[in-house]
Length: 252
Image (cartoon, rainbow, N blue to C red):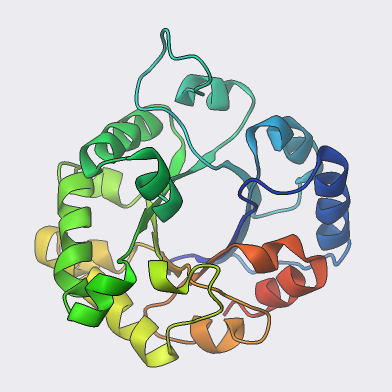
């Protein structure tokens, strides 16, 4: 049974003290997860050690929001997989639409990050998704398929099964717009079919695919009930303890 996951992406928000309080408030809910459920907190780099110290419950994890695509070297301001591993971090978000748009990250660069993360024993949370112009043109399937092909398809089946995929309709991030449950299920099922075509249905059925477009406390349970939606990568709502607690409770 593949994992159902509520993943928080704090982005560049909160002071250290606010982050501590947010984690304390969420963890105080004492939600006991089922074996097939996970909660992941994607926190800014300066807060990783603090979060690792607090997040100790079963199936609760801490994630970095990015890493660099080189092992080490003269790359001022960047953070390597080896650095993350050395402080106990076991997950890392890569390929978020904001990284692609603002920092010019390509599918090739993301494939290099994937290799480093997998080589270091970390779990990548690989983001993919289309902008509004692509959705309006009706070519979202081809767009996301290319993202998967160019970043993932060099991997073995065994390595692919170690990855979490997060589908994010870019037009629904921070806009208040949300894909309907039908739209979310349709594109998630398509992503799984792309994986199945390359690696076989059995492999594709083991991979968690999260929805990442304005997930809220009020729509999480409905979204997560879709057959191919295995949880969410949550932005704004993950910054409000009561909201994220309800999102966790929405996992199947």
